[in-house]
Amino acid sequence: MMPPSLDRALERFYGRPTPAYDAIKLKGDASTRSYFRVRVDAPTAGRPAELIVMQLPEDAFGSDEGGAQPESQRLPFLEVAELLRDKGLPTPEVYVEDLGNRVILLEDLGDTTFEQQLQRTPRQDWAQWYGRAIDLLAELHERCAELPAGSIASRRRFDRALLDWELDHFREWGLQAPFGPLGEGDAATLHGAFEHIAGAIEAMPYGFVHRDYQSKNLMVRPSGELVLIDFQDALQGPRVYDLVALLCDSYVALDAGLQRAMVERYAALRRIDPVRLLQEFHWVTLHRKLKDAGRFVYIDRVRKNPDFLRWYPQSLVYVGRAAAELPAAEALLRLLRERIPGFPDDVERPPSCME
Image (cartoon, rainbow, N blue to C red; front, side):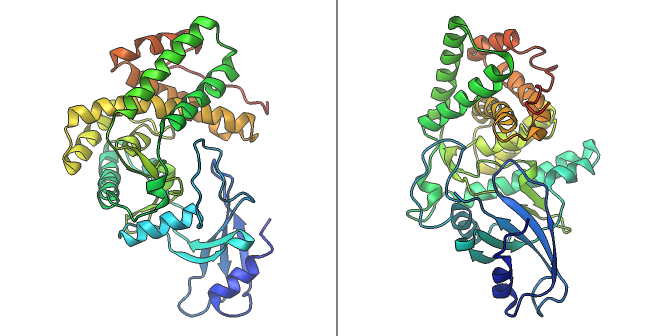
């Protein structure tokens, strides 16, 4: 259902009484926002005939992704969008902000995500597309190394509380919800593993992090240019975090050789020791992919949306691959093999609460 206030936003954008239009609701993502594509019959000269409507939830400033949210006078999406545009980075143009009515009008970037582009591309040619995504990521991190004073992306941080919350999210939803409560010994083993993961990450160099730089959050223009979206959760975090999000993407099964080649490409662009970066990559992979596995079950059990459960198994494939590279993760690897049937390479999709 279209927000009733959309007419007012369209009047502002087109500079005249609301033109006739059609609206189609777009398939949702894991967020609480809703999106519509609007096609206007007779747009004002110089204005596009198609645009995207972002309908915000009632608690537009809130988040159920964990961590304390610093006070902000501006919606994080809009603040970060302006920051990225000022840095010369590709983002959708914001046409109208009508926060009183929870409506934002955005540039329509089309329908091709990076994920869809990969589906149309022979696997042997994936390296070309991932090379573009790595180049953009290196540019993003380079240009955002220094941020304006007071920027929300500099005030939010992947602190210990957030690291612990995300790991506990896996314990509660990714492990215990599908497979039952842990015994005292297993709980102690998991706690020790989580302490090791969080401690290793806290010791890493931090910098600007998009926080969800993956195949569904990069749009591909007809020209081939990649455009950043879904950047509202940007914060200070481990420098390798976005690299993990891209190369250990639950929506895409990436082989270890391509992962390593892209880590090395990024390391060369940012002038970082590739051996050290790869170690950081493995530790952050454990954290990110455990959290993702838990998130997919949470979305099913709490939001009653089973669509994301299909990617639970691939998340754990990446966990197993990273843990095998880290001798200190041996106890975690053993526990997950005992608790999750088929771990790491033959895990089945967990049953949905909707079934």
